Image (cartoon, rainbow, N blue to C red; front, side, top):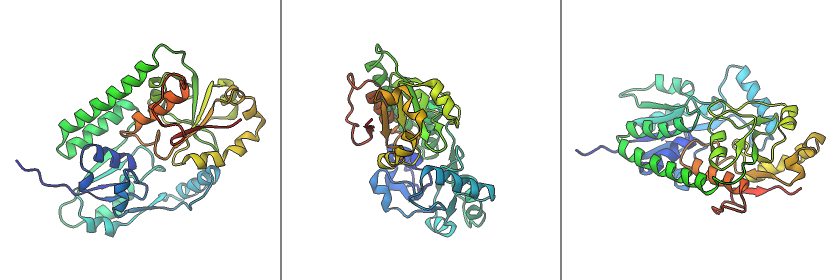
Length: 309
């Protein structure tokens, strides 16, 4: 039986990467403004836009987001007419974080005005690695590609297991993964599992639970061996640009990781914060940081850098 080509709109970067990994890159017809990998998807028309001005620092972003949310508004705008003109069969979105990407609530107006057959809405909401692998299956089922989804997940799990095997007999450094800089937030959900897979021990966050805000006193009390900066949506240079504000605080200078030169800035735009196929590369990055003398996957310099004292 011939399967009719799909018309897919993905409004979530990780969902776009999942669809491409399953072989549906050619059937994507629209994307969110944040979907930028693989590079070919940038040729697709964007359906969304952010209400946040570019170039804001983390503290400014947090204040602006709180202002928008307090007004009962969404952080994102959806071009409903463009979405309807694309006539998608399937729309991929999420309910995990209303601040991180478009949610089904943001699509209500566009869906309400739909004429003809309404698209299938697939909403992803992973809390841990098992949920991420399950999202591959959900997208695969919606696109009649269950077998391919199973194969892709098996390959990703095998790569993840190989990372763990490479560092299994080594001491586990205690790692604080910082997802936001002002105020401080520690990466939760699947990130503690990535740290464990990379031969480390996560501090201040629990697998499967949302990323918690923390106080400086909590970070000082944990006093981790490694501090890994992975602010959501920030490239390495953006994270480094905000380091002077951290370094000016006496509490920062007293941390073991800072004194020992074990602070690292990573690419939080492309890794860690996108629950899709590149979580394996994210674990490789953490393994390189935790065990630099034992493993190398070629990510240093491009996906992470060691912060100068």
